[in-house]
Amino acid sequence: MRALVLTAIIIIFAFVIKVDLTEGSLHLAAFYPKDTENAICEKQREPNYITVQTIPGDTIHSLFALHPAKVPMTFPERLQLFYELNPHLQLQALVPGENIKLPLSFEFENKCGK
Image 1 (tube, rainbow, N blue to C red):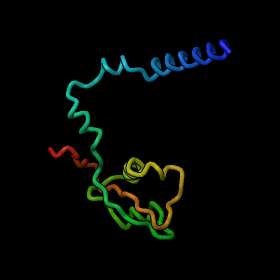
Image 2 (image 1 turned 135 degrees about the horizontal axis):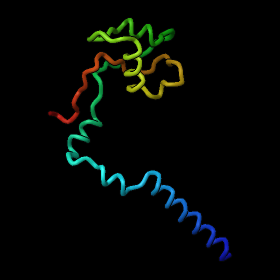
Image 3 (image 1 turned 90 degrees about the horizontal axis):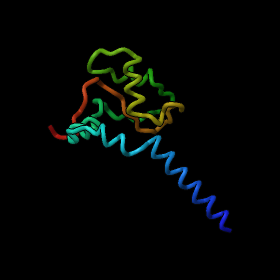
Image 4 (image 1 turned 90 degrees about the vertical axis):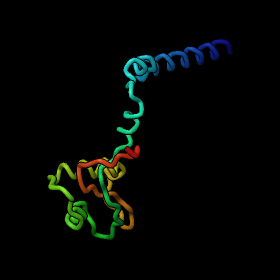
């Protein structure tokens, strides 16, 4: 029984050390931004977009054609923004009736109110 408890303690200890070395907390503290408010605002920025509901037969191409961007951008650029807004659609087709976000421009909305 003592061997089982000792083995469990060693495994837990090894896991804690592995997590600390790979994800760690000390190296993050050294590089933590001094201006934390700006850093938080940066993470909250999203591209300008509209929300549309898909219907049967919709594709990404047809949605981009129906709702053109405000500023000229290439298809790959707009597709990249599309997948940033809708990461759940990376490996699946559009489902009829689903609400998705379509990017309209590269400009970002500032969610911090400045």
